[in-house]
Length: 117
Image (tube, rainbow, N blue to C red; front, side, top):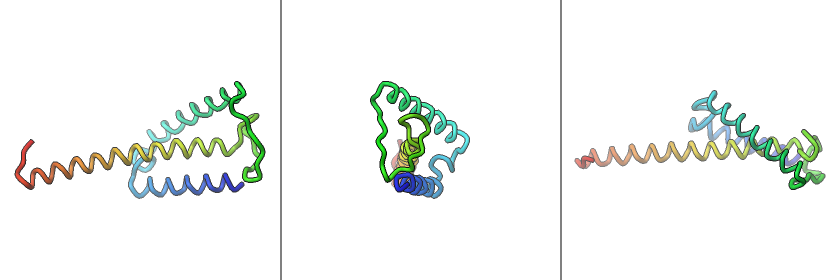
């Protein structure tokens, strides 16, 4: 239960960051949802394939809920994959926004100094 609570907490932190800077879900919710659904399907499929090959195995832990979505696939794994995908998209869109802002700032500085491109 502690692991799921931690995942929910960090997902909430990512959502606050996303909301504050309008990075992903709060910029383009329909596109963001499509990206997250596609990512979740891909990563859950990957996990199920690895479980079938015997690569991923679940071990009981007092930190987890014990709820299984499929054999060897705990509930927490879905939340972890969501967090991983969300974190990636917030970092990517944040970097794009930062670079766009810096490029615009650089152009304004050049214009103010009388430098033309």
